[in-house]
Image (cartoon, rainbow, N blue to C red; front, top):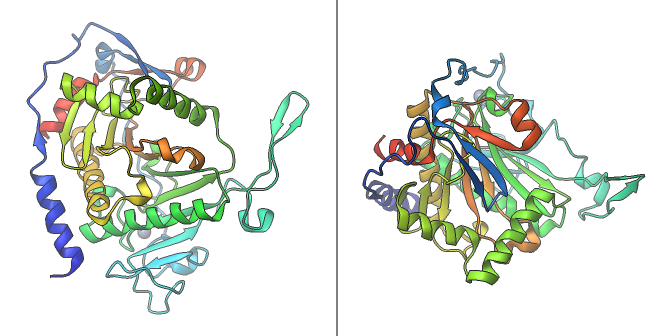
Length: 371
Ligand SMILES: [Zn+2]
């Protein structure tokens, strides 16, 4: 039995025997609303279950416009820039870029339509030029590396459609590329994310994960870091650790718990069926996960996106790896967040950053436990 097969069996068993939590009572009555603050993100959410039945609340599923030639499918490698890394059909990283035989399982390519400037040309490998003032404004032309991980040559659109090996290699590639981005000094923070289907911002249907290195630490990230630091000083626990401990005690919003990860719907969910996958150990960074932990994370992401698709009829969704800026990674308690995009942001949300969510996370967790 190969090493991958051995770990696949172990992980499959671990996921199968995930602790099932008893059904929680609905937390809110249908006519009630609840204004809630998320201490991690610093954002408010208005849980308003009576709005669930508004006739225009749910968005139609709109598929991404299909192209005649998919640049990410096997055989179409010339449609993308040359690969930065290639993993073969056994999950091994190849030393060369695109192989002549085109037998690959996963490719990492530069983003052809990058938002930031080129890191290689402008910074020579280092985030160099600082921000500068323009009157009352601050601006920067700092570059930021941007890459795409294509986890399969097969034309599928969601994480839930990847097989075991593709899932394992995707997360291995994510670890490798974030570690390289950190070591290269080209960015202060790495944002790994996936946009699935049009309402989540996907422009291509073929499943792919994006990695963007940002040269600045935004207020949003700095706020998360500061709130976590405050909690560590106050309670000797990370903020996320403190939240998970409370949620396990309350048992209203826990979906599952295994040896390495806890899945929950956060208290102040801004989106219906918003889901966190949190490592139980606070001191293991994402790039330091061992093979078993990494594979378990990948299979949990696949399982949870599959359950969301079952519950919500294949919604658009975003998946985000929430990690701290590199300089703050020692005290970080990272997690994966899945955001189904079944509701539309409108003037109120844009003007206040307060999101209205018609699905109480207590009910969402109950549905996800039993689906
Ligand atoms: Zn394709």
